[in-house]
Image 1 (spheres, rainbow, N blue to C red):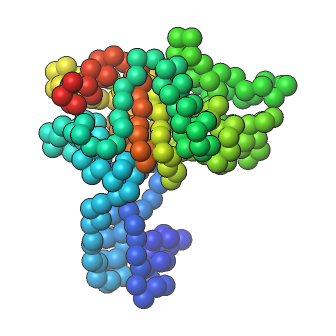
Image 2 (image 1 turned 90 degrees about the vertical axis):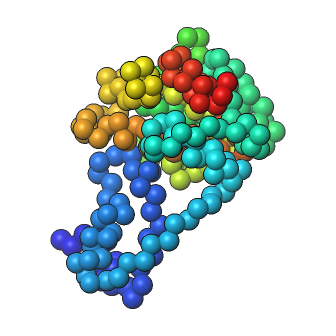
Length: 260
C-alpha cells in the first residue's frame, strides 16, 4: 500500500503539512519532516519549508518553550527562564498543594485546569462495582487515571471527554489524552522516568520507571519519547504551569536553570 503522505502529495496540487517533530511520543507515529521530504522527492514535488516562530500557549512566551526544551536536553542552548515573563510557572513541594491550587482555578471557571502526569504508575481496570482505582499514589496523595475504553465509568467521562467534563478534574490525564488540548492552568507530575545525571549535569530517562507498554517496546528511542512527552505536558497551559517532581534532584536541576 502507498503511505498516506505519498497519497496526499500525489492527489493534491498543493499539500500543506503542519509538523512539530518534538510532539512524536511513540514509535507507531508516522509523519516526521524527513518522511514528508522523502515522499515529496519520490513524487518530484518541490518542498518549501516555513518555520512558525510564535505560539499562543504559555502566554505566547517563546522563552518559556525554548527553556523547557533546553532543560530537557532537546536542544543545545543554555537558556534561563525569565521569571519576569507573564507565564505563571511554579514548582510545588507536594502534589496535594499543587492540586489545591489548581482546584481554585477550576472552581473559578470550569474546564480551566487539569492535572496530568508521566506514565509512571499502573493503570488498573475499574473494580466490578465501577469504582476507579487510585493508581497515581504519592505519599498521602492519590487519584485515578482517566477512564479506559470508549465508555465512561459511573460519573466519570470516557477518556476523550476528560478535558471537557467537570469530573475530569478528579482524574489524572496522561499524554495520550492531553495532547492536542490546552487549559488556562496545567499541573504536571514529573515521575521517576526522568532522573538527574550528575556526570553531564543534565536530565536523562529511566525506562525502568515507565508503566507504558508501548514505550517499553522501543528502548532505543525511549529517552527522546519521554522528553517529548514532558515537553508537550509542560506546554499545555495558556496562563500557567504548576509542577511537582517525584525526584528531588530533577527538581533542583529545574530550579537551578531558573536561576533559583
